[in-house]
View 1 (cartoon, rainbow, N blue to C red):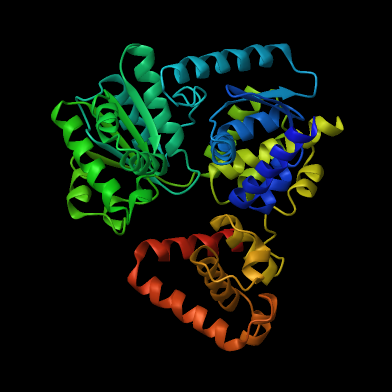
View 2: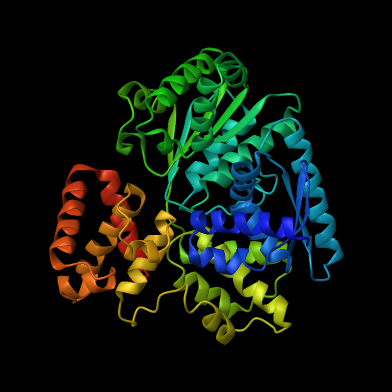
Length: 446
């Protein structure tokens, strides 16, 4: 790589590290090398197909956004895999990439891997799956809008992508728009700034199927809520299908207008719960079969029992041990699995430390642990710092003074103030209390 490319990639890595957190960065991004950089595409070299699987499904959008922020280009991300590949998997990936490019050429940003066939149905998600399937078969005629809510990483993005992919299979010429709410907000801002609201309105109000992911991100964004309200009405009146996902039910989304909440409840609301052990084993088996991973029964059971948080983390653990096995050439064993995941899966018998609390909170808020210890007072750092201090008081036996030492030498009064701020916000905001409870469960390994 020439010096200029290396400099650009290093700048990209710095930005990505800020966005994804230290743990994810060290595991998935440090081994990546930039091989080609063109306006149309970026060629990245990665160690093996497991890296590709995880990055493509979880971080390709972040990589694209980073190049746009730094270079004002939005290239297609392509991967070169360093290891020798299985021919069948190579062909399958080629087919998926062709489908992805075909969709993107039409301005459709669905993930072609997220299909109903690839979705594992269990008691935790059966109702949401059935509703999504019904909508995909008859868009605009039943359950409009369909509102799906679930915690992070439980499959709601998979399900709404599956709706889009099925509709396109059955009706090739329909106009499908899949958009995360954060991107929708950015488009509203850009349209206002560049005086292109007419184009923006035409794009969204001419959709046959609108899939909007993580709607909770439009909270507190007045103009975005106004535009989404009018978009919703225009599509609904034309009997066009709307599918919305969120991490909580409509009534619990803070700082959005009552008229929008009322629109969200006009159709069907379906929730998805954390999977049972049996469903998690089924998910592991399906993923292992797709990736040609030989996964022993004791490893499957151990992963299903010990990965408590969500399906995304379960799949991440599987790909992490598969990536390690591929690089070393060693078979996957329970002993190897425990060793590789020792920093990922919490041992219930291990005492909870302030360092682990800070790491967990930093990952949740996509900041660095060092920033929690720093003197920075920006909102992006101050809030997670206060939460980490509060959790340290709740989950350890340390004094306020000792907790303060872990946060760069803060005094006990600072820690006490942080704890009171968190307690006040918990009492006022159900959504915030939900976040705190989720962090406690994650830290405890529940």
